[in-house]
Each structure stands twice: as C-alpha cells, then as structure tokens.
Length: 249
Image (cartoon, rainbow, N blue to C red; front, side, top):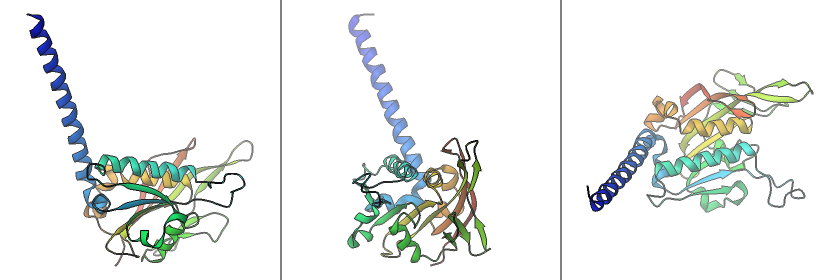
C-alpha cells in the first residue's frame, strides 16, 4: 500500500467519524425536541425569558444583590436544556433577567419563573392570575405548600445534627405551565419550591423524559404538578410526583 493510499484511507476514516458524530448529535437533539415539543414548544418558537429573584436587602454586603444557589442552579439547568432544544439554531435567545428588572412590556413574553412568591415578585404576580389549587402557605415559621382541594399541607422536613443544626432532608415544589395571564398569546412556566433545593430539582424534572411523558405534559396542557424531593448531603435527588392535574381556564 502506497503512502498516498494510507493518507486517503486515514482521511476517509476521519471524515466518516466526523459524519457519524454529527449525525448522532443531530439525532440526539431531534429526540430531545420530539419528547419535549408539546411542553416546551411555545418557548422554542417565541421570545422567552428566565426570571429569577434577587435580594437587594443586603446591599451593604453585596451591592449587586444576592441570589439563592438553588435558583441559580435551576436557571442554569433550564438554560442548558434550551441549548439542547436548539434555541440557538432557531435564532431564539433565552435571557436571564432579575425580577426587579422586568418592565411592563417584557411581561408580554414567554416567562420561565424560578423561585416562589416570597423571593420572586413576578412569580407572585403570575400566580395571582392563575386558577391553581396548590398554593404557597407562609402562615407558619416554615413555608409549605397547601393543596386546597384536599386541604392537605406539604411541609419540608429537617433533621437536627450533632451541633443542633437543622439540615433540610425533604423539600416540596410546584411546577406549573399555563398561558401567561398577563398576555395569553404567550406561556409561562413556574418552577418553585419551599427551598432552593426543591427548585433546583424541579428544573431537572421539567426536562426529564419521565415527566415529559406524563399525560398532561405530553399534551402540552395547562397543568400544575406538586412534587417532593429528598436532599442528601446538600444535593437534591430525583423528584417524585405527588399530584399532577390540569389548570382550568
């Protein structure tokens, strides 16, 4: 075999590997989008914004404000999934904005609200416009979720360590998809839990095949999903659905 033949075979092998890899990536993205198309399609096709809370009460400590770690992890999960869905290929951008930066005209867009009503005023405003049956309840020293249909409260659980420090071991969260009540031409997703760990887990759940195969998510219907998640060594585990139901118009 001549040197030229060896070079040609090497180039052909490299090119074949490149085509195979490109085809695999394209197929993987297509499968991801196919599974998620009903639930996430409005956010792929239109302008979308990820809205997270920012605390400005601690300006003396940090002038730019503070954001919960769980909320930032959740925002990163959503942004990464947007890339998998091909937002950039469709010339769609997903901007991350803070709740105090969202002006009136920006409410008329697809919104992905991260965090509950106590830390995110946009979440609070959107929830007031939705006919949901699961609500945040801050009436006690612990934030909990209340199922108003069954009058059942779901309260996070803590364990006390050797130094009398409480560690969160079980969190509850709420995942909502519905028309944006401030502009029904657009959609809104809310991912919020009693604590940041649950919010982080909710973002993972919203992109998981198991959740996207559930009946309401697969149909792309307006829905509310109550879930719980164990927290082990400061890491949220795989969340489990407690209740999932449609949201009436």
